[in-house]
Amino acid sequence: MTNLWSAIKAMSGSRFRQMNQILLIDLIAIAVTTLWTAVTGHFADVTILSSVSGWAFVTTAVSFVMLAVASERAFTSDSLRLIPLSDGKFYFANLVASFGQLLYVWVAQAILGAIGLLFAWGTITRELRGIWSWNAGLQTPGDLFQTGATLLILAFMIWLVIWSTISLAHLVTNVITRFLPRFRQQVVSFVLYVAIIWVTIRLVSFVGGLVQKFSSLLIGQQDLGQLWIAILSLAIISALEIAANLFMLKKWVETVH
Amino acid sequence: MSDVLTIENLNYKRNLKVILHDVNLTLAQGKIVGLLGENGAGKTTLMRLITGSAKGSGHIAVRDLEKTVDRKRHVSFSEQLKGFADGTRIDRVVDYYRLVYPDFDGQRFEELVTFLQIDTSLKLSALSKGMKEKVVIALTLSRQVDLYLLDEPFSGIDSMSRKRIISSIIKWKPDDATMVISDHYVTEIAPILDDVVIVKDQTVAIHQAADDIRDEYGIGIEAFYESLYEGGVKHD
Image (cartoon, rainbow over all chains, first blue to last red; front, side, top):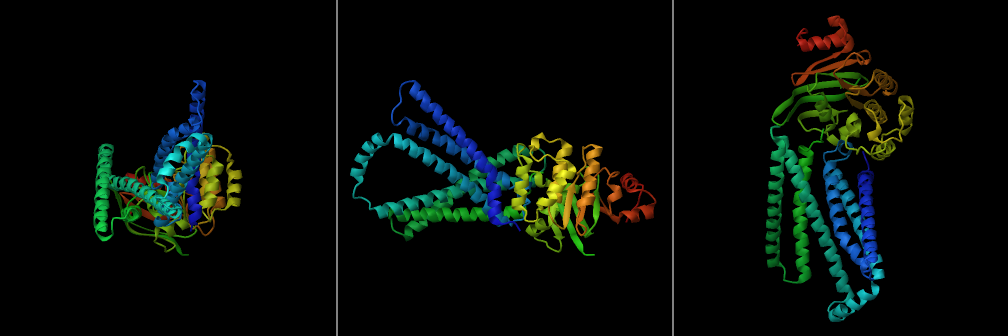
């Protein structure tokens, strides 16, 4: 049987190369923007930071889409699905491979941001001093760490729900088209995609709202408590979606021939 | 001799169309089996069902193991190359194989590469159809498994390449492993076949030893196969 770590490595390889290409384009875009600003005589110490943060949105959005496509293709690719791995391990390896690459892009963006920050340090500290003095005494370092960690977990859970929702829409469409006649299958698939995404979004917001409503009755109205309730709601939604995805993967989802 | 593959009451439908119906088949170990049938008969689908790439109903067991993950462990299927981008270099595909298939034999792959004259530094997009088939054969045979499934390994390739592929099959097939070769051109593979399985009318119409066909009907495998489709041979 294939080792789980080997499967993660195998799935990460092509995604890593893709992410490197995106980051290279990102670097070129930052360099060109910065140079252009310098040539036109508008260069300031915050120029690099604004170039980095300006392109960061495009880079993270493109990498997100590319990884989602790679992740979904894995479910129907013979080269990957023929790996001797249970469906559960396969799903997990695919998820980890994508998340690892997404993290890689975010870390690269953070490093670029830090470099931009070094150049803009003077201006930024002047601006921040005012905000810092205004906030001073509101939160201890311990509180800040706790809030930061909670927000990171929340961000991860949001990503997990988005990812499992994309898979759910893809796999449901894949399964339904399998049972439809070939005639006008593409049109039907498109309509199905739109309908399933709409239904899924409605379902997710309904379940999320419901869980939040019930839990707010049980727990008080503390801010951090609210965040944990949101995390719990997202965990329930993603667990349900992943269970549905695994069921479809095991029973009906075939590789593209 | 034990059985390597057992299929019972296998049914498969796609897009409301029956592709395979009530398929029953048992293959013994150590054989080279010709899976014959016209285009669209369901040969590839049958192979995909064995590996779990397609999902049907019924029972499929490889070495008495029914779970899909166990079957994949014991089967090497020539479709394993599907899914790689055209720009992927062959040596990268080989690295991938080494990583995900613990039974991949690097030494055997090197021998096959030399025998089939494959340049592993090339990208998949740079390969001719014949060369691509050779790569597929080298990768498929480099795994140490009980059942090899080769889906139309000779389609659209020149006779020299075909002969080399056939020679590699004879040379590198482990004695105790079974190999299923699907095709609709029978002439060149007929001499190496131990068994013949013919898929017709959405099911396995015939499963018989190649020698028995020659003895019983007094004709070659190709003539037998053609006459079956033309209605000349009646079989229970």
